[in-house]
Image (cartoon, rainbow, N blue to C red; front, side, top):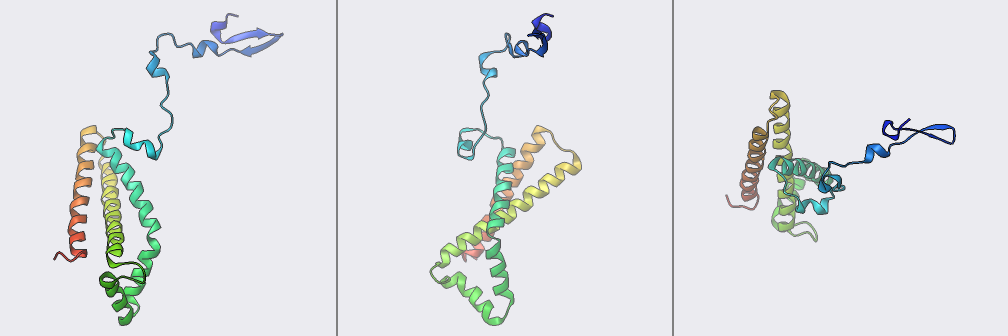
Length: 166
């Protein structure tokens, strides 16, 4: 049999020859090269669309909430146990806790606020797209910008309240 069929008789055995499959005569050189796997450090080299940033930040916000879960549980416990523990909770944002200054605690809580808001808004965006089957490029781009802007505005408002602007 000819080699173009993919079968070759070799040492009285029938074996498959896939060399014809790999001959890419009409393909340009650039399309044959695979870019490899994308690593987080290489993410800045790619120009992602807004939906790509929302996807990456959605994962990041979920991970941040998971990592900060012990702090959330501690803050919740301190705010509800007694009046004395609520006083400790309140003073932590004014004077700090032990060696942790108050401004650092506020920044960590602000990061937690951003993570919760972003994860919630991006999750609602995802559910909305699933329920309405809105998967066009333009609708995905608009909803991604709405997610990014609304989360930034809400985080700025709550951050201003956290840092005592009003």
